[in-house]
Structure formats: structure tokens, C-alpha cells
Image 1 (cartoon, rainbow, N blue to C red):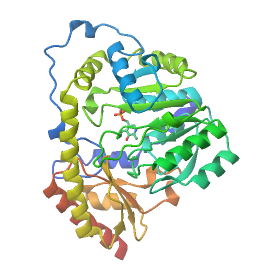
Image 2: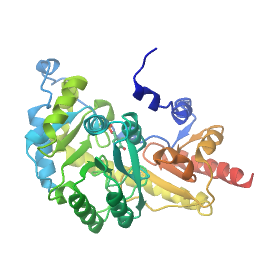
Image 3: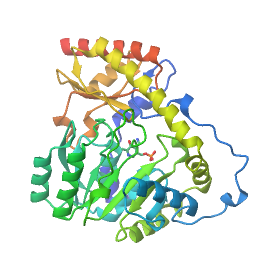
Image 4: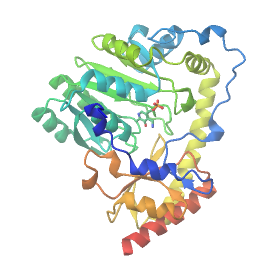
Length: 385
Ligand code: PMP
């Protein structure tokens, strides 16, 4: 069979297979980035206009684009509705950006660690990903400068607010410094912010794209983490030099994002109920985050180190004794516990053993405590052998 060259770069994922096998109800899952079922808002389909069943515009529903542009301007992002493209989840932004920029061998700058499905998308198109180490307050600036001096990445992919997987939020100073470096070297920024609104403290630093003076940019967000991931509605906002290309790519990918989902997203985002819903969501997830912190302190104090996440959906653990966490996952599954191994979040997985990503939004507090007790035991047994 004559397949494309790129398909050989798409490796089947052992972890995906293990996690797919872990759908049994007794399995305690800290693996996905799923919202809690109880917090999925109810939707009212009765009012859906019949016209939403018709073909729509590739750009997206005009009212939704207006609303997203207004929200972005409130964050300091200089944009008009004409720069907003509604996409089928922010995952589609990663696909469209990959198609726009990446040929075989194109360099792309990423954080280490970074979102694994972004790595997969970039690598599918043949990218050489350049990893810049992440610190507690954002990327290592000396490493970032050195990478920009030695390479010519087509773009930098950054997740500055409650990063997946590390939960890091860049400081104000690092946001400014990163923007200045990208301007200096003329490197396009792809800024991915699905977790901005899932914040547990008062901190909210403006996006990096709002600090750029010269570099081109794409800013992407989604309703997946605050409303319903099943709607598959996200958006990108692009600097005017990039927008027409992204629009054409969107047209050729799927004509437009499903209008029924867009309509539903608009009902929520445009209503007074939305702020109330966000407040409830933050309270609910803060309680789960605190429950996980308590259980981790009880069971993991001697096994790992971590920072308390101030938002997002994940704890990122560094094992005191580095182990291959993919092997640990198999051992944990035998105890009916699953988590996300750290290796796939790195450009070089083999060089980065000993990290675990734990989701705190999906499992109830009682099951969380039992699940983490079992996971700690699995790690203790593996460390001893
Ligand atoms: N980017 C990041 C960093 C994510 O964590 C996710 C979801 N896990 C996505 C993009 C994709 O989100 P969606 O396609 O559901 O909008």
C-alpha cells in the first residue's frame, strides 16, 4: 500500500492502548484531562434555530467571533473579530499551524515538557522540535536565547498559563522577557491557553501575544475545559499576516466548525450564567486540588516533589528516584489505578524518566485517597526491586 511519507511518523501509542483498556468502572483514573461529570453544564437544545443545520461560514458564527474578540481585547490582545477563526477544538489550531509552517525538518521551539498531542501534531508533519527547559516561573531564559541564537524555528509553541503537563504559570517578568526575545529574533508565537479561566488564586497575567511588538502570532483557546469538551469548539486569533492562510487551511480541512456546537457555546459564553458557572467550577476544582494535595502529602512525601498548582487540572510529580513511569503505569493498572506517564511529554522521552502527571478533576475525594495510596505502594515496590 502506498501511504504518505508522514504516516510513518505517527507511532501507535502504547500508553493510549493501556489507558483504553482501563475503562473499567473500578479503575481510578488520574490520567485524562477530563472535566468532572457533575460540572458539565446542562444544555438546552429546545431553542436551537433550524438554520443552524445549514452550512455556515468557514470563519465561524459572527456573533461568537465578536464575543471572543471582545474577551481577548479585555486581556490586552489587540484584535478584531475579523482575526478570529472558530475551530473544532484548539487541537485543530495545532493541526492548522502545523500545516501552515511545517515541512520535513522544520524547526519548532517547544517547552520541556510540553503538551504531548502538540508534539504528535508537529512531528507528524516532520518537525524537529527544539526543547527549552521549563522552570517554576516559565522557561529557562538563557536556554531560550541560546536556542534562538543557534536555530531558526518557524514558531515557538508555548502554554504559559497552567501548562499541560507541568501546571507552571509564567511570571510577569518571564512573559515580558519571552515576548522581547521573540520580537528580537522575529519568531512567530503560537500561544495555547485552554486553562486560563481555571484559576484558583487572584493571579491573572496577560497573554504573551499582548506583549509582542513585532513578531507574528496565533493565540488559541477552547470551551473544552470550562464548558463541554464534546462540543468541539475552540478558537484561534491570528495576526493579520497569518489569518488568511489559516482560514484557507480551515476550509480545506472541514469547511467550518459544527454550527450546533458554536450556537451552544455562544448561549453559554454570552450569558450572565457563565461567570456564575465559572465560579462554581473553580470552587469545585479547588476542593479537589486540595484533596489531592492532602493525599499526596500523606502518601508521596518521601517519594516525590511537586508544586501546588494554582490552576488548571494537573499535579506534576518529580520522583525522588527516577523510574520509567511507562513501566509503572502497567504495574499500577494491575492495582486498578492509572495516571499519565511523564516521558511522552518530552521531545526525548528516554532522557526524561521519573515524572508523573496526575489529574485532580475527575476522581472523587475518597477514591482519590485510595488511588494515591495504591499508586504510592506501586512506586515503593518498583523502587525496591
Ligand atoms: N492544548 C492543550 C495544552 C490541552 O491541554 C488541550 C486538551 N487537553 C488541547 C490543546 C486541546 O483541547 P480541545 O481540542 O479540546 O480544545
